[in-house]
Length: 193
Length: 239
Image (cartoon, rainbow over all chains, first blue to last red; front, side):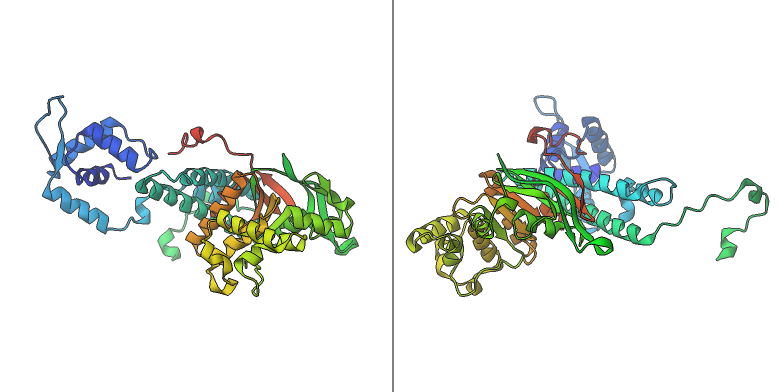
């Protein structure tokens, strides 16, 4: 998640100081991603160094608001204009877990899948309940919907994986070669291609 | 209060080596105000369970109770009467009678049960209003209303009179996602008002509206989630 771009986007609404930015961020995302105030100030000073924001004079209560610059606006527009690439997202622990589950001896893959599906559905029920609250504002609803769609996709992927695994009759995972073999000169990967 | 209870219910087709266990020792209890979703792959026994719950099919062993009455103790005639008075169905393709108006469709269970036309129509209009339908829709025929409206009529029909058990089989199947969502919201609302709902769905998004989700695989209930915690604790742990 890009704190930098989020702060620029919030400053596009008008000048604000750190605590206001943190509060606005959390209100827009329904506190789904808590942001610590230190992170906000570190990011603001980096943005200032890169001339994407400028500090305004302190107000009477000693808070220093920041304002987005033209360079900051261009940068923000660029962010909104670019899709999020898969490689920018963190690695998915569940995918890795299941990939390992099908290749690890003694793991009941169907059980791993069922446990995950129950947990994901539980999460989905919780999001749905939050969504049913008609008072929620648009940004928060949007965040919730995004989480609902992701949970739904995960369940569909689990269903699919379960069906594929059930059909596949998993072969016993091949053990790593015995140590003796490693004494032989190994063939470089390039040559195999 | 328990509206539907399945006690160790099995349904076997054929016998001996050819026996197919469509459902095996299923236990399930649904109370008033509760909505339960059933999920599972094709052929896992979802529809069998729904048909047994509504008395459309009888179990090979075990017992189904609707509002405290054991279905196996009833004569065919009494079973039909119980179905009319206590159980409502909502199907994927609405199953409205094309030659009857929306109000007549909603009033049908009451009329079949001997309620006078005037009284039945009055109840139907109230039921249509409860599902959020414009009174103007009441005298239109099924082919003159949208899919979303037709499904609302079907829900009104399912819950008209004193019926509290609604059995829904993929009720959003033919609808676009936003309209489908409205139908689920409506079912949820009717359950919140005291109905008991059993929803068969393959769609996790729709199961999200339920209080509990039951998973079936090869005729067995493999998992059943407990009811949700109170809303206050919902966001803890969300990151």
